[in-house]
Length: 327
Image 1: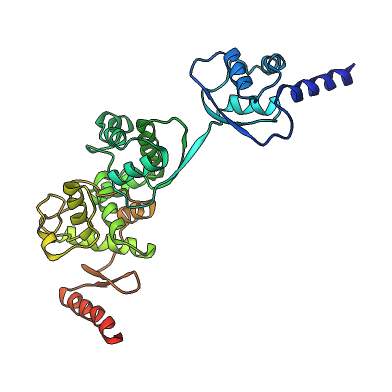
Image 2: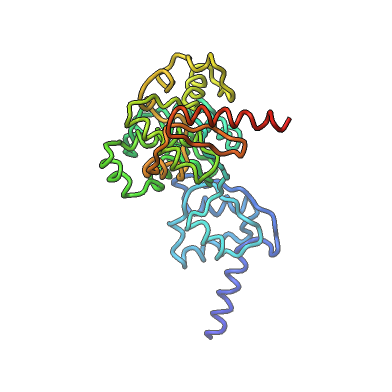
């Protein structure tokens, strides 16, 4: 009798799904509030379930018929009913992958989301400027600039701009280490100021090991009341005004009128100029203790650091002389 019961259950489990061996996947949308009869009908319509009565019986026996998660699913044909019910009850919904590199501005992230996820740029920017969402997450500032953490995201199909911005903001909070706020408090610095400094470091650094050193240079300049004179802040100021980043700056650009121009204004700019990665965030919170006040890019992709302006000038001349000597 037990053998017959077990065999019957096994037959029930196998029979509920589609034809065995199918490799096709069907995208099925289950709206919020849908009853299990509607779930079954949708799966039958997509060819995922071929025996709806037995499928409902198995769901009832497992207690899953009232615990299906709404969402968009990519469901393979030919899988057992047991597997299908596991997926529906656990909410393993379909996702799209979005990889956000370090150093993008909010506008650039919006363009990337539009290209990869078809989320309208205007919708993304509106969500990223929603101060109520910032307050809900406990983030300071007028926009999400600086808080859209560079990361690879698996975004549920059908997500809105607000969903994505919220996801990225939460990822920033998850990456922010618990002890960092205490470290900053001892330095008299707020989290937003640290993110601002990190965004400048992100714009300058090309080698990971230089990030804490660059942060140390800017920290020294802040403590001595010197202008930061950071090129990425000028590039950001121009982008804000003209809508496009200027990769190469000319002498006239350093006089560009903007509160973000750290050649014209002392201290940090009003806010972050991009979204820094975790390494740059760490560097801003833990800047290296160095004597340097200056640095210049060299031919290796890194930088040469100097303590005095005279050393800095000599370093620039030496770097510029190398290509000339090779020619």
